[in-house]
Image (cartoon, rainbow, N blue to C red; front, side, top):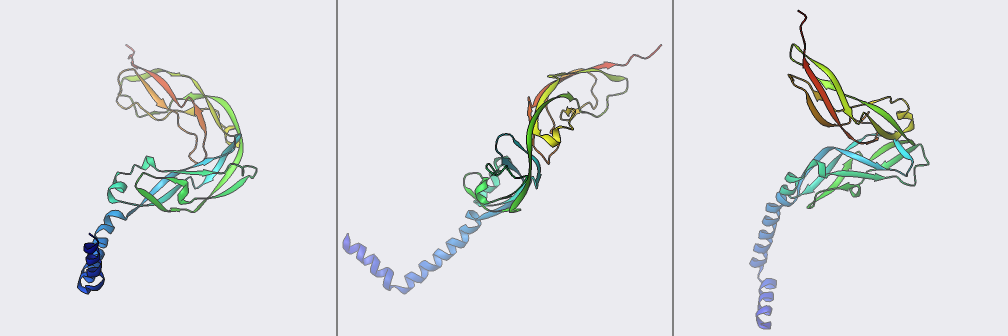
Length: 227
């Protein structure tokens, strides 16, 4: 066995043709698999989540999303779900400042297995902080579309009728109510119930809403024409 191994080493070291052929095969193989193992793409508008100390909230965040440059196999990138991507910035310990500049690095991004982050753009975000407060506000339905002629909304009941909203003091002090996500009324001729989420007051600053979904009971009736 030792003689056979020595023979192979000798051929490899002294056979120039063999070495040249091996080199060519290696180069060709590398370029052939490069498009497969090094596929790249940019995923835009990935939300940036900021972690603060207790009692503090985000008053403003610019920008609120970032672009992530991913590299991986073509199959991994193709199957990557945008919802799997998450950028998290931890500014705990820095919330004594009104404004914080936080860097966005590849390590801040959670990515699907089999891919890695090359860079994030922009490379930093500006965060304005405020004290966090909580208040209870009523929920208003957001109705879209029109009923057919001869029909009308008799009444609307929402359960629960109010929710707790937690966020930056300067924003919440002007909030008097929150709205549901849009409820389509287009072409409806019968009463219906729908469980639906609460719309956030603004995409520029974050709040916590509890509960974050309500049940809306819409009573539709046929309009009675006067005789």
